[in-house]
Amino acid sequence: MSDTDHTVPPREAQPGAAATLANKARRSFGASDSIATIVSVIWLVLAGGFFLFMPSSRETEGFDSLTFVMTLFAVFMPIALIWIGTSAAKQGRIMREESGRLQAAIDGMRQTYVMQQQSGGIEVRPVIEKKLDDLMNAQRKSEAALERIASRAGIAADVRLPGKAALPAAAAKPEAGQPALALGTPAEALAEPISVEDFTRALHFPQDEKDQDGFRALRRALRDHTLAGLIHSAQDVLTLLSEDGIYMDDLVPERTRPESWRRFAAGERGANVSALGAIRDRSSLALTSGRMRQDPIFRDAVHHFLRKFDHTFASFEKSASDADITAVVETRTARAFMLLGRVSGTFD
Image (cartoon, rainbow, N blue to C red; front, side, top):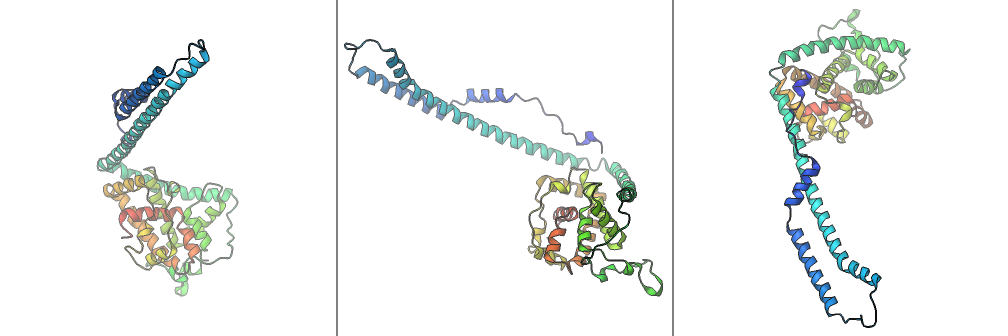
């Protein structure tokens, strides 16, 4: 999809903010101005009456300029304060109205963008299919680049630190058609299990090219048949989401309890696990929901990722502590699961 497909149509020129405020000020002679006028008139009448009926002292004193100036201040300063307060209240009301209109305009622009995304899905489907092919090619290139970066960083030889295995041994049995060694021993049965620490780092993906521990953990995860499927599917959906400007680092999920994740791993659905849809960003939810409805390729990739995560997390939860679960749900892969699971109704 070209950049022009995502651009918002230009709006008609609007008057400047200063002109808008001036027009509103001229049109808004309302209750506050009437009250200020009445109070000012009453004050002038009282002040005039005071000086009118005050005994004259001119017989004993001449003209005193200081007294005259202080008298003017005493008469007109309260009036000035009255109108300053009235003007401040009026401008505050106008600014609140402008703020409300601005918020409404922003919401309208966001809704227009979502509608454009939804209405343009059918027309650009061939383009999306081509981009999916490009995505697969880019994935193959990224795997090759991963090995080159690891070699340049001097971490080709993996030295695994002792740690608790992330997945039980039973989860490593091969699927139908998986090659096995002689005497019926699966190839993965002899592989060293991945630790919880490396499992968590692999699901979060490396931070940058200098993240040696992240690349080391990712390579170990890719050697595991079950984890490799989850890693590849997570990479697919993260890349597709980034096309709409949705990045997991920008999403801050609400805190979830490990007990809810254990219930989900045990197969519970509904109110007990609904809190796992902890991504509340309205723009991301709207864009993802619209693409789920309009883009079958994206929808298939999402469902494949959700199944992989569900199966892998169910195995991980059996031996994981609450701290292990808390660390995993902070990863980019888990945030994508919370976002996509909420949109697809996985937690209902």
